[in-house]
Image (cartoon, rainbow, N blue to C red; front, side):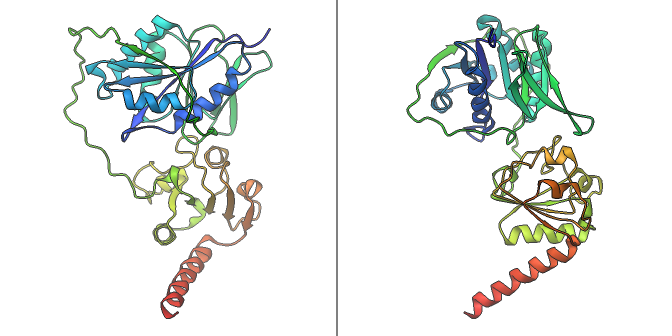
Length: 340
């Protein structure tokens, strides 16, 4: 019978003047799914104002169509305006699926759109595939990440899903790709005034080394031992130009002030060339966020730690001892270089 789906839409979120990388990851997965359906189109959706540059970027991904939804009220993200615009667009063109990144914006926008459209949403997916019954299956962690559940949305349309950046693989953009550009002005009557007023926009200061873009990631787990060694791990990260992430227990212990660099199903997903974990146990909800790393080295005093099961190299030792040795080795190399 074949997969019965004619169009997959992907919201192209913009941040810091560019389309976020999760768009290309979702596009790659959408194209894979579309190849199993006859005539399925993959489309990008942009919301905002003066979208020409963003539309050109999205077109290069290889999508069939780029929908540019432009209106003065969409210049800055505001959930209720965005919901009305997307609802209007969906009701006009009737896509079968609508996917978004599980970003701060997507985590608010997706359920709001799903509620407005009275459709199903699979949130925080770790994979999307075609099931045996020829339906799209959305894989979502459950029970603290210990179980991966399969969510189907057989009746309502569009099927909706959110996926965090870094979970899916992305293919390079096709520089010679061309797409149809459809400009659409949504029905946002001037008399509608949002109860939320945007007073100003103050971007947070981004760290010099973003966790999701780093080639080397150091990760702290409960077995790190103490806040003193948490500080030493951050020092090591600065010295070797590595980003530092952590599991939830580091937040619970109040070593880290926020969850912004937490790795796992309720945090970020990373794919560095080198992941080096200290005292990380290997719980499923953490592994989901780092299992696609290039080389995985784990340090844990427990020789039976679960993390060793996915590690390329394992070091059975106290994390404190290895961190001290690495800092000392770095200092010796620096001294040797100065002497030479």
